[in-house]
Each structure stands twice: as structure tokens, then as C-alpha cells.
Image (cartoon, rainbow, N blue to C red):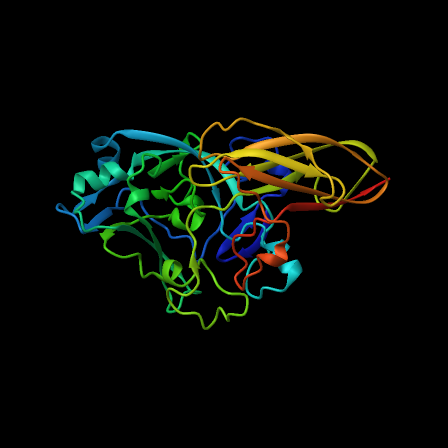
Length: 353
């Protein structure tokens, strides 16, 4: 893992470790935390469900397991700061980890549908948002506060949104949110709140710092230290994106036919329709072989062979989604003071001899 911070622990796998893997091994799955990992005792842990509901609930893990139908979803989670390093090359982004393309990982999650729990609680018609709270205190928040966020009711009631206690057929690891986490496929990882302790139905989005102030795209000239609640664009569904996983960036290799592989991800209910790859910085393109979409919520891997000439070579990749949307060419057009949502063409630099 490439570790950016020990406390809170933030790390991503090397890009080559993600190549050709539909599911990411647990010890390779990226970690994004805002505070110390809380120590929760599963036997004493409880989930509170309150707010705009008819029947407030307090549920143990055993009650969740036995009261509701078990469900499973295979999903790719992606941090909103994925590929921030490309934006840092345009202009520095102080105080933010220079994430590469590895803050993206896929797993099979098992638990219960959030919609079933909300149905048992009796969601009222006035409820428009579902807020989540965890006990990890984030010092970076102003003021320091537990981590939280929310999603609209329209998303919360979809069958793919889970309260999960298992990951890749194993108990959910502590670092990934045990005993229970939310999984919101197709949305930025920040909304898949870990170490979940409270679910609240409410009329407005969460006022938690990480919903109201952080994870928002600010104008390029804005000072993020002075930004207040509701400024900028709130992040939700993942933007269309792709990355080159193999070969690694800044690699020296023989000239000639070379295998190029990567992932592409469309977000929400879209799928990737095409991936183009270029060996001349985008002047000409080859269409890559693209895996079929195994699920609307999973990445798709792609591969092609390029005949690389001797010398310095820039390989670029771009994806199209099922709506006909295309990734933008330049990270300079996407630069923002927090370094979020970079989905410009993926590029690596190679030296061929």
C-alpha cells in the first residue's frame, strides 16, 4: 500500500495491484479515514433509527441479521479525491493527499437493504433525506465532530443500498467499518459511512461538516479554509472515469507491442460503453477490448496492445458511458481547491528502448 497518513490511516494500493481483478482483496482495498478508527464492541453496538419515522428503532447486529432479509451487492467504491495527483501537477493543493488512481476498489458486500429497515421504521412522506452518523471524531472538521453525511430518500430506497456487515465473504474488517457500514453504490465513497451508529430520516440534507462543507467542488479562486456550508457543488454520483493500471507510470520497457490494461467506471446506473487508448498523446486512438458490465455498480476492466516506438511515450485513455458522455481531456479544466472529481483522460509516461 502507498500510505499517505498513519493517523488517520489513509492508503491506496499500487495501481498494478488492481489490474484484472473484479474484486479487490481486503488487504489491497483502499483506506480513507478522517479520524482514528473507533473501537466498537459488536455485542454492545446498537443502530438507532430515528427522525421522520413512525416507529423509532434500536437494533443490535443479531436483530438486523434475523429480522430482515439478507442481501448482497457487488460494488466499486471510489474516493472523491481519486486521481488528485493529476490536479496537483497543474497547481498545488495544500493539505490534501495526492491520491493516484488506486482510491478505487471493488468488493461484494452482504447485509440488509436500507429500504427494508426504513420500511420497518415507517418512513413518513415528509422525509426527503437519510442521514448517517458514525462515532469517529474528525479533527479536520470545523468544529471537530463525528463523521456523517446523507443521501436523498430516492437513492436510499433503492435495493442496492445496504447496511453491510460482510465484505468478500468475510466479516467486515474493522478498518473498513465493522461492525456495520453503509454501502451506496454509484456514489462517492464519502457517502458509504463506516462504523454506522445512527440513521436519521429528515427533510433536509445532513448539516454534518462532511456533507455541508467538505466534499464540495469549489470555484478555482475560492479559499477552502473560508468556505462555509452549502458553498460549491455537493458531490454525489461518481463521475465517469478510467485509469491505466499496467504498465505503471514512469516505467522503462522495450519498444514494440505492449499490453495496456486498466479500469473504467461510469457511476450511478450508467455503464461504460467504450474505452479509447492512444500512444501519441491523443492524436490517434485505438478502441480497447472492454469487459461486459457484470453489474451497474462494478468497474469494467479493459485491455489492448499498442506498438510503442522507442523514446519517451505518453499513453492516454478515455472512456465513454452509456449516455454518450466522454471524459474531458485536460486536468487543468477541472482543477479545484480541494482536488475532487478529476476525471480527465488517464495518462502515463513510459520510456521505451
